[in-house]
Image (cartoon, rainbow, N blue to C red):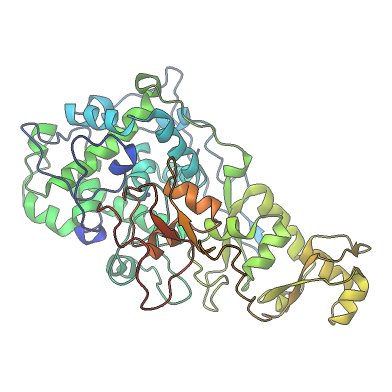
Length: 483
């Protein structure tokens, strides 16, 4: 198959109104109203899994070998990290009480699944990154519930941010990320890099488990910060029962954070109980890491791998300017088939030419070898860079990649003066994800440009920007609904 850290990792927010039934409002709420008579009850095993595997035919998963050492322009061998074949394989890794944990967990599970098709669609969108995280959790032998932690944090959307705000599918704060060794700069943000951020987040969870000896408390430390949890526990042992642990005097949203994690695991454990049909992954959802010896232009990588350039950037959001920074990292997260295609194609392009490419549109038909000669290239290099045959004659209007940065393309003409091309008018049935998809922009950019969060409620007639606003401009969502 396919969004603890100190409390500062989470943006302040209010919990959704009790009557709200939209599952999306449960995904990123870090704040919440005080719970009623029933506290969020926390229970389950403290160290090794004590819960039997859910599947009747379940077996203990075999360890996954360490990732092979990267050779120049190579992809992770398929046998090194086997893909998660089914949701059942994830259920086999579950180790906490989930559905049986507390009444609050069951209540939240029904809340998440109030719209079964919407919940399933959110998981379908998350599948590529979820699969990658699942394999990382499998490698470490951690409880499968933590595969769902980025879903609770960010709905598996690598949300970008500025200043001291959290970012990425794991919603890591800048200070925590840097302390853990992630680089954050003008051209690269390790919190948005799913490979680097996942390794960092799982390291933190492992560290918290080593310290507290309890996976439930590891989740609480991820949310509230390990120092606060350690101070509250003092020299006392971690409470064994959910009721006792629920009385630990952390913020209510920290208790709720664990309850939400277990609630989503509850649905995955028994989807039929909630009328949810879990989506099955396809070949394009199975990602691998392609390691490179040098910088590679992302547009070139997309063309050579046969991928849409926007999709490649969605899978590699850590690169902020469409190219790898000189200091690295030099790697890409790609579907396996495209990863193999890219690795093979790069053998035919000299490494000094990898860094910068630009696109031109042919005004007249041109044989490829003539075009290559005109730009000081050999035909095999130009053919490999554009994934076309060496003896091809390129028709007028063909888009061709050439070495060098070239000039920035002019801003497209506005087809409708009344409704600018960079504005979307919200219609009934629109969602943030569908608007980003149809507008060919990253969801994280759509949120940032419009001062929204994944929990924001859209209203018909609302105007959303589809490109970055001018400096000093007024937000298109000045009257958007609050979180």
